[in-house]
Image 1 (tube, one colour):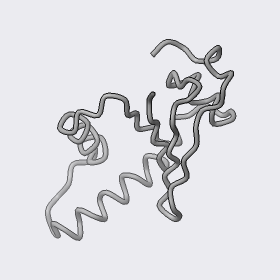
Image 2: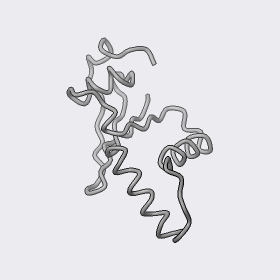
Image 3: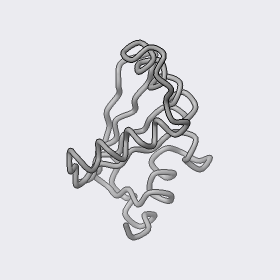
Length: 105
């Protein structure tokens, strides 16, 4: 089973990460691709085998389960964690019947 973290749009993520590091390391210039660098490093260090990070602006315009299946290979039973900078995360599962829509991972 894969867990998909449905994240805010990339621009919001980069702003939030820049804000955090700006408070932790004031005055230190950050790379423009700080979000990509951070996620890449976390994934390589943590070795999360079945975790996919999906910025919301990378999803096609369709219902979330269908969009995740079409664009990222989500299948029935996969876990989705919708992350927001303004509210508590919401968790749900890809419903049964989505496997036929999903492309191979």
